[in-house]
Image (cartoon, rainbow over all chains, first blue to last red):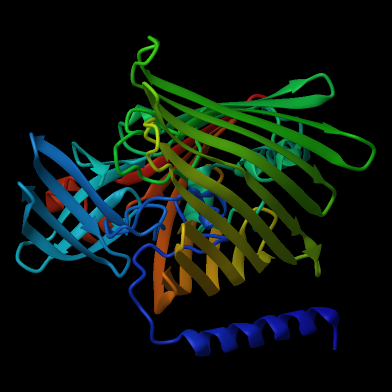
Amino acid sequence: MKMSKYILTIILMVTFLFLWQSCGQSGLNNPFGVLGGGVNGYGSSGIRDYTGGDNTGDFVGTSPNLIGTRRYEVFQDNYEFYRFFPDGRYQHGVQVLDQTQIIDAGTYEVNGNTITFYPTNLPAYSLTFLISGNTLTLGDTQYQRW
Amino acid sequence: MIFQSKKTAWILFLLGSFLISQIWATETRVNSLGGTGFFIKDNTNVFFFPATILEFKNQVIGELRYPGANNSYTLGGHFQMGNGIVGVYLNNPTWLNPPPNDYGHWSNVELSRKIDVIYGFQTSSLKWGFRLSMLFDRAGSDEAGAEKESAHYLALSGGVSGQNFDIGLLFELPRLRWEYDQANDTWSGFGLGLYGRYFYDLNQTIQVIPVATLYINPSSTKYDPGISGAEIIKVDLNNTKFSVGVGIKYAMTQKNFFILGTEILGYDQLKGSQGSTEGSLTRLTFPAFYAGLETWLNSWLIARVGATQVYRKETQSYKYDGNSSSSSTYLSGFKMFFGLALAMGNFQLDFSINEKLLFDGPNFISGTNEPISNRISLIYNFK
């Protein structure tokens, strides 16, 4: 057997082994690995992310992009926020004097620089987004990491 | 007849096609090809493998990453200088998201956009390249005791490339600091990265490309309230990443190819500790597939299709006062990308296409306000 066939056979065997281990999972809306995918085309190899996860005091982030909570101060101590979970869910709500009220919640999908929200209580809607440091620009509004 | 013979016309045509084929490259391209940047030769390689700049000389590159947002744009150029090539990039993303600050101490400065200077030269059989990246941002008053914030980023990268291999080494120093009177709050550390790939020609049409990457970044945040006897709060952070993968490139013709990159194992761990409390998030990718197809539809139009399929295990662990807990989640996801490029002489425009418009139709049919393209790259080759 030629060397090339050996290499291809090994690659196929390893692939099937991992696929068998991994089948039946879901929930990754923005799929990228360490080596590939991702907004810069090189996966997370070129991305260093230390952002907080979900305002629970975690030390670590869960995604270089959206995951976590960001809020916008509508006026003093009154906030509008978006919270993105790693399993593809989101919450959009307001916080007034530490009282939180959810406006819409459901699942979201990232497509390039556009997020499409699929709320359970409203029709689907799309917004463009940009992340720069701690700032998430969603449509025309800038949300700061919370 | 413009050309004296058909043969001359064909030679000029083929030469022109070859010149055009040499300028395919941009961030939009690697994105449209499923994020296969490590597995293909592209001018975005220069940030991981600086010596590859010698393969992309005399170019001006524009990256327009977000519609209408100037701060997401990058302008770069590669220029011949003596026996070497100099590259300069303005407003280039660092792709660095620093840790959040509970007190908002770093909210007025950003570690987001840097300036890159790259230099590459060739010795007898090897190419060498070096990159210097820097960023400086500052907010607040210079008066003594006044509140001020600053952001610094410095990176040095070196690389060596041969006929069939590329190696890159990265050293970077990010730093954020807030000061007010006697109080200060700082995040700093260093990053060290090592990247390598090899192009092995199995035969004239199939190429096997093993790739490996390693990155470590220990850092810490330190908050000193500046009050005598008050506790200094220090959090240590550590990011470790490594990955191994293999790509298979199938070249249908000289210019049309299919690439399949398989990430056999990817490990990405972020760890934090404060005193006896520890937390970590470990993302294990096993495996991930990145596929891309690039084909010339005619002499000026290039189509690209890409896909990623990622299988990942995420484990979150905590330790607190001797107690520990750990939970794991298995996730997977699949995504496709579409791209088009227009090649007009030495000028090329790359578009990442919003595929929703293929389903819904443009505004006059569906009323949608979504843009046709998510991002655009342009490149001008002035050979």
